[in-house]
Length: 128
Image 1: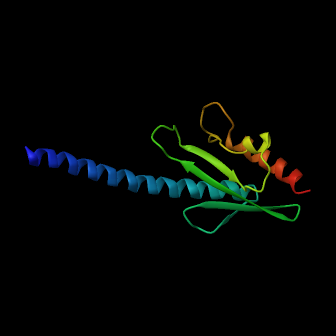
Image 2: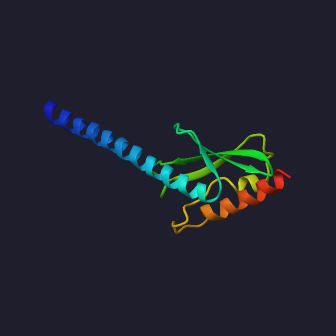
Image 3: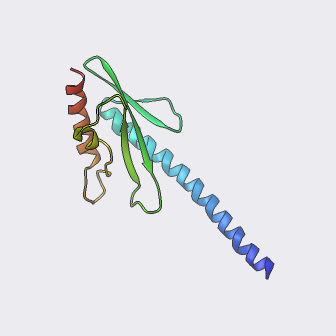
């Protein structure tokens, strides 16, 4: 009996390992796609670390935002967001430039394109 139960736990361990490997591949692919999207809007990725930061100049001032996505099992298509510098004052604008859904995702809320447009307008005004 012990060997039967051990076989089950070995299966779970293998499944978890495969899940983590696939998640790593997906994160890398999404990060690359995000790099392409952001570069089309003039944002440049800073480094290639685990954390993903983008920078862009607005009116001669560098703005840095962090992109991250929670790939938890409870989220359909992940939970992507931009994290803005803490020096930026809290406002409704800042809240509306945080979480978003992918442009090709059919759901309620703000799409990536909408949030990107809000960021462009906000930072242009903020840096004047």
